[in-house]
Image 1 (cartoon, rainbow, N blue to C red):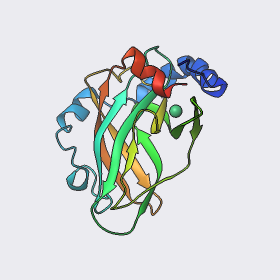
Image 2: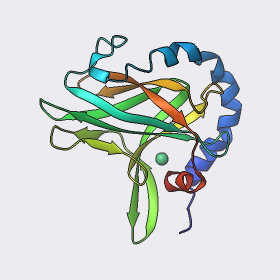
Image 3: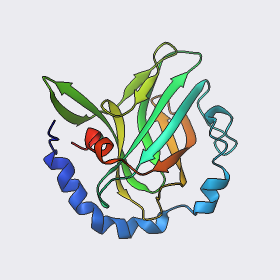
Image 4: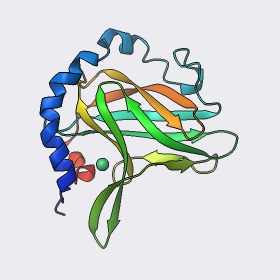
Amino acid sequence: MRPIRSTAIAALAATSFLALAACSGNAPAPDASSSAAATAGAASDPLAPDNAPHVSVNDPVIKLPTVAGNPGVLYFTIEQDAGKPNTLVAVHVDGAERAEMHETKTENGVSSMGRVESVEFSQEKPAEFKAGGYHVMLFNLASTMKAGTDVEVTFTLANGDKVSTFAKVQETGAMEGMMDHM
Ligand SMILES: [Cu+2]
């Protein structure tokens, strides 16, 4: 399997090196995020009183780019235990200048990646963001975003509700990295 690199992504990656220096000053203090990392249960997080009712985000993980300056990626599952279906419309990651929801599709053995504006989920059908499917691409990562840290992630729903939690930052394996960066 040969990865096909999107020219748009390559262009964005090329500009990210310069922007990195500009945004690194806004990075959160590592101590602040690690002390609150245990409260990953979204619905009861005291730091986020506006969290959407019945909605939770599970196993949020940020994979660092294998090449510095390239985009990182965020994986998680968002689900709800009651109520009407919801729609995820935006994701904010502390330490990433920009976060875009993408979907990787494979047709006739050829994978391509495109931006999506919204992703629905319901009590019956959680939305899974994982390698080879939906994922959140993170551009212009702050230098403070290192493996082993926890960073705050905020998800915005179409109705204006938000869910905040902390994602673990991890290195990306070589093969793993090829899955979503093509
Ligand atoms: Cu992507």
